Image (cartoon, rainbow, N blue to C red):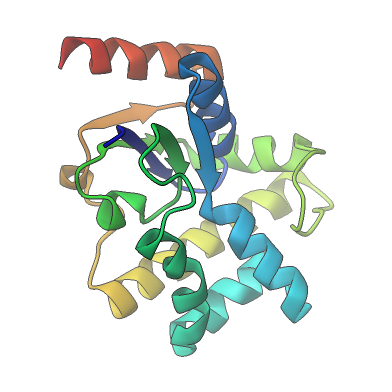
Length: 181
């Protein structure tokens, strides 16, 4: 059975960037439930924030995303999973949570031209407000549908504040902690 590292955290914390970089450094597979969520939002003709609001009332959306964990596409191989709830669905993983100050998250989102399936914002302030709203909706959604507090840092083996770190520095922190365990 392969090893799995799950990377959770709020939007703009660097989850996808760090997860992809870490998978590449380790030569492991990479999987993101965010990709699945953005695809569902696109299919439904809504933004990711609107999809988050819909998931509070419509459990079928969660079921579509969660189905991946029942038969993970990475099988028994080593994998880095980028997902807010992967720490819950892959309990034997090394669980990492990335945090970031709201203003920095908003700036990252605003400047990320590669971000697909998400609304483009007119200003950093608008993207910051959207990130805060999305996080609030996720807190409600995950508490209601999963009885989980995604802000409870006790769920994780490692918490890294990415506010003043490069993705490379975050990867190094994760790898250093993995080696010491």
